[in-house]
Length: 355
Image 1: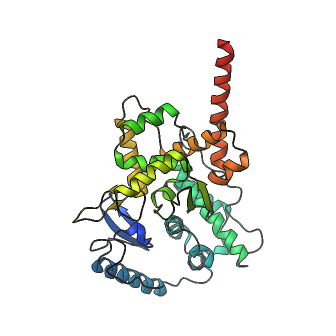
Image 2 (image 1 turned 45 degrees about the vertical axis):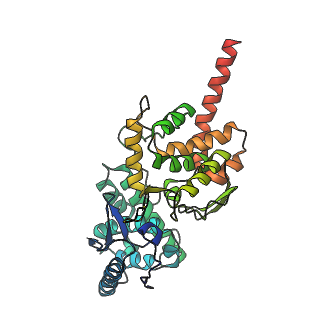
Image 3 (image 1 turned 60 degrees about the vertical axis):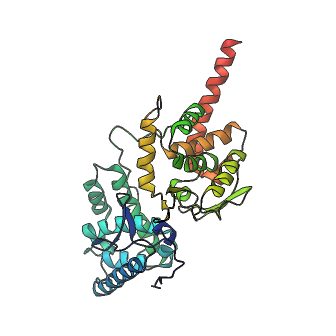
């Protein structure tokens, strides 16, 4: 693995560095998590101490990984081979980290078993161990399915072998959580009362319809005046999204007011400290608190609800299915269309009643 070298012009925050196996703990300090290790990274992001400690941790884990070579017939071996594959390395860093967390769980549960003898019953048993958290249980099923799909492509398992096939998704207690689409009145109310630092990510969600991860990692190079160019971390798709006039006016003003590579920041740069950027979890928690603090605002509003609101507005404006899907993706379009159609029909019904 190539090393990252310190230089005086190095980025001053980890989000810009996009380093593997790192995460922000409690919104304050960066940690390194790989294999069984979970430890704080010394030094400030961008400093020589930070880089040297990160490289030392990576070297130690590389050495341990080479010493832990599992038998070629084991499930652990299949996992290691997948994580070294071009397909895995081509994934976005956040996706790789998410996959790795589930793969570590599978190692503990199935690691020593021969991968050619893993059965549906065994996978289902692992999934059921996490039944109290339906999302995690479903990730187990999904990860096994992805792993064996890749293994079949590599001719490592017989054609059609997928022990996760036909395992049903567990339903969350109380049913699946419904994402509520923000109304126009709620959007105006929130923007009137929310902290200034939250306005930019909210407007980006509303006028581009992108996911939280892609919004929080947008740099000023993505903003090209009349378009916002973004490569989606989840799909890898490169999108050119026309920049709405209201969003363009806001971004032009923001760019003049401050420095920094990223559009969305948590705290502005000072003489003594570089700007801090939003971590997805920290932003989600801050948005929740801001919604709670907004007078007369329903409590269950999320950034994903703004993504649906973006799709809903496109549908109401007369955009075609293909046009909306080209920006938001199929599932989001379906959810937003359901909401927008209901709202339009209700409006038409009331107009007829008043005629």
